[in-house]
Image (tube, rainbow, N blue to C red; front, top):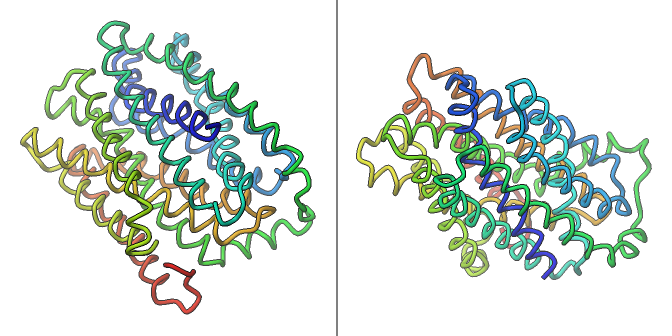
Length: 387
C-alpha cells in the first residue's frame, strides 16, 4: 500500500505539470517556441548532473531520508513556478527541481527494490510502476478539468497540494530503515571501479541504452507534443491535457498486462515491441494531418512507455546487489535524463530547418540505437536468464 500511494502521488504531479508547463511558458511568460524546449530541458540537465554523484555517495542508510527530503522539494516546485513573476525565477526553480528530481528518482527505485526479498523484486517494480502510471494518468485528467476553471498558472499551484502527499506517505517507509542500515556499503575510494564495473555489465548497460532512446522521445513529446497539437490542430489547452490523459491510460493498461507478456516473450521481446511501437508512433505524429489519426499515433506512444520503463528497471534490479542498486539505478536514470535533455534540444535545433512536425518525426530514428542494444543482449552468451 505504501508503494502504491507513493508512486501514485508522484506520477500525478509529474504528468499534471508535464503537459501544462510548456503551455505556461508559451502563454503566460510568452517564451518563444524554440526556447521552450531549452527551459524544459533544464530540469533534465541538473537531474543528470546529480545522478552519478548521488549514486556514489548515498548509502543504504541514506535512502529513506533522501526520499523524504527530495519528494518534499519536488512537491513545492509547481507552486514556485506558479508564483514566479519572471522567466529568471522559473529557470532558478527549474534548476532546484532538477536536483531534487535526481534525489527522488535515484532513491525511489532503490527503496522499492530493497525492502522486499529478491524473489519479489519483479512484483515490486511492476506494482510501483503501475501505481506511478496510474498517477501519470490521473495528472492530465485533473488538468483537463482544472485548466478551464483555474487557468494554467493556478493549475500548477494546485498540483503542489497533491504532490505534498508523497513525503507524508514516504514517512511510512521509515519502519524499513533498520533493514537498510544493516546493508554493507562499499568504500568511497572504490567508487570509480564500481561505476566502471556496472557500466560494463549488460544488465545495466543495455537497459541504460534502451532508456536513453525511450526518454529522448519522451522528452520530445513532453516538450513539443502539446505545442505541436496546439499549433497544428488548434486544440484547446484542456483538449491537449486530455490527449496526455489518453497516452497514460494506454500506458497503465499496458502495465496491467505486463507480467503475463513478460513471462511469454521475455525481457528482450518486451523491449523490442516497445521500441518498435514508439518509433512508429513518433514517426507518424509529426506528419499526420488528420486529427483522429494524430490522436491514435500520439496515444500509441503510451503502449511503449508502459512496457519499456518497467522492463528496463527489472533488468537493472536483477543484475545488482542491494549495496550497488542505488549506483546501478543512478547510471540507468542518468541515461534517462540524458535522453530527456537531448530530445528537446535536438528538436529545438531542427525546427528552423524542418519545422516542428517533421523534426518530431525525424527524432523517431533514435529507436534504432535501442533495438541494436537489445539485439546484442539476445546474442550475448552472458544474456540474463529469461531475456
